[in-house]
Amino acid sequence: MAEVKLRKVEKQYPNGFKAVHGIDLDIKDGEFMVFVGPSGCAKSTTLRMIAGLEDISGGDIIIGDKVVNDLAPKDRGIAMVFQNYALYPHMTVYENMAFGLKLAKMPKDEIKRRVEEAAEMLELTDLLPRKPKEMSGGQRQRVAVGRAIVRNPDVFLFDEPLSNLDAKLRVHMRVKITQLHQELRKQGKTATMIYVTHDQVEAMTMGDRICVLNFGKIMQVDTPLNLYNKPANKFVAGFIGSPAMNIVEASIKVEANDSYVQLGSHKLLLPKERADKVKNFDGKKVWLGIRPEHILSKEYAKDNNIVKGSVSVVEQMGNEIYAYYQAENHQYTARIPSDKAHGLTHGVDYDFWYDMSKAHIFDFETEENICI
Image 1: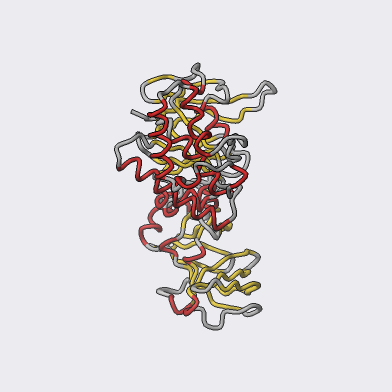
Image 2: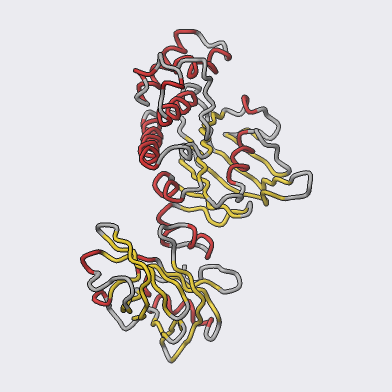
């Protein structure tokens, strides 16, 4: 059993600042859970509280069937991989990976077996005699992961482990850690992982589920696709997705059996399933959210939801174009396949079609999603 449960966990510092506000969260046995959010949202603080490196001010942390509030980090059944690798520079890769096991007075043959098994899994076998200064950043990070694996912990904790790597290496290590999780699960070993990142692309590609945090509160916990397609509130909608969702002030207008989003001088018709959910907001201010890939060129149009915009910047991405434009004092980003972006260039006025079947409407005051 390697479930992790947080029950009304709080963190308040002596100066009165409250960093974490009563978090409740269940992480399943063998799950890859990602904590994501902007800087200062308390994702690393929460991870460090689970690890026992940070005291909690209230609530309970449960690992397996044990409340671990008062246990030292070494007694919690966790292994942590840090951002800065934290390797001993005077030791070889083998010695770094074996160090914790030697401290635990494990037999030499068992240490050798575990280190070699982990090294093979992480493609480190040829590097075992080397010292950290002789390796690249990605290799060092793999050693740090290997050092965690050999301990056979109940839970793996990763604190922004890839943020010191260059973009290409980050992608490689992202895939490597995901493969490691799947391999451990396939072998029937404990594979519960909690991974902290500020990079929402990492979160979307790696997590079984994602916990989105802001100012020490949980905004939403769900699968990557549900977070993307059904954001619970305006914060999650704006944070998840790249380029970011377009979110602008609008109002709802109900006429006969139809509901519209009034966007300046434009009236955008909502499809029935969304129209039914906003009828009680007639005449009220709302936030309209629409992702860049749901703003397309006029030739895609299935209705009259056309908005004319003045294009300021066009970024050619190869298979698609990012168009940045202004329409009635609002800035938007559109993401259009290159072969369907005829005439789309800097400085032109262009007709954009808004696919309102994919739009999100958020309550202006509470910022909760009305459409889910």
